[in-house]
Length: 125
Image (cartoon, rainbow, N blue to C red; front, side, top):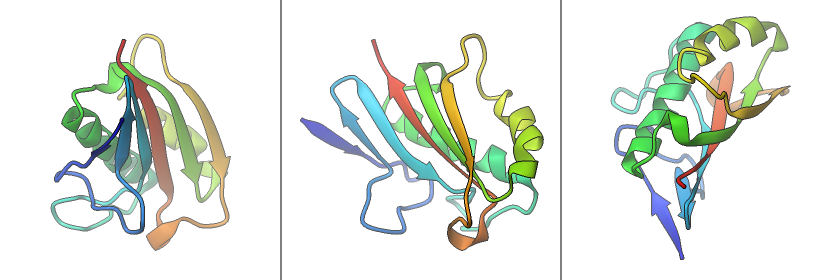
């Protein structure tokens, strides 16, 4: 049976989707924009936005009883692929040891003018 996971610390879904769905031992997180769940604001720089997106991922992981070490796959969407190195520098601070598998794409645009959006899949063994 699937379980809807929602963290009050992460921004609410802005459409007909859940922040995350837990199916058996796997947690599927929707893409997280760099919006501060408490203030509704979005930071300016790619570094700040990457950090906020990953903090939002962390809020949802914790709500479901997971943490960053349980993440096995992420997808990073960038408004500008030239931000790849700057995003990577921040991203690396959130994961250690065996990094999750990942894909990274440049997209035409992201909601609310964001520079980055990150989703994740986490597994509890």
